[in-house]
Length: 267
Image (cartoon, rainbow, N blue to C red; front, top):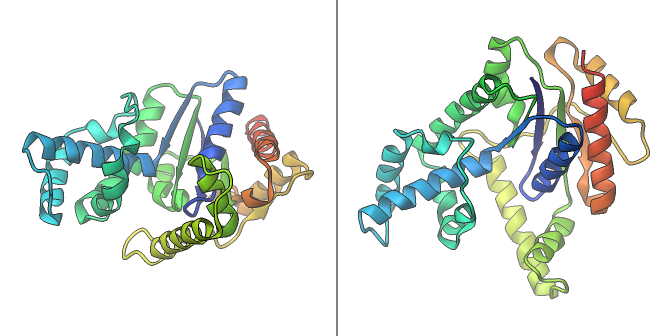
């Protein structure tokens, strides 16, 4: 099984990069499982609200969230890679409370379990490629990689300027010509989220200390080989792509070329 990791700060285009990876793998006829830490937290939040609804609690306190999370985490629902969650992951109440739920100690501890169980499920299901994204995925997955004598096939480190990220986020909401106030407000929200992610008490986001940069027009095979040579026995270095400097089509070409190069040169 090959493993592709996608990392980066909030709104660094990880979702679109992940989708482009899936498209590239589908074209290659690969059996793929994609899992991301953000969706795991949202799945837990959906299950927490299911539990609160069952108890007829409409205005939950922080204590209610923690108690419901304890019950939810005793089940296997949030770890199910096959369930169709539909639009429930992006409902308004999930958007408003996922931050609260995800920062409870119980859920943070559960996320560590998720990082270890997800690749095991993929391996047992005879998957060709597992695509995982989140904050610092290599560090969280390392115990599993060591135990199974494996290393990532490719790790993409996505970056995007917050000004550009704000504009793209607003367009994603259907706001094609946002006002300056709307752009400033969205930019501030993204910068605040990134600051908070870097200053969390546990599992804070940290930039990879070393990486291989890749830009459109470069040789993907050479970039992949250099990332492996420099990474040595620890596995390939992350390949940094600046999504903010690329159109969607160029980004797709870059991602597809790196995925194809990584898989074609795997030992």
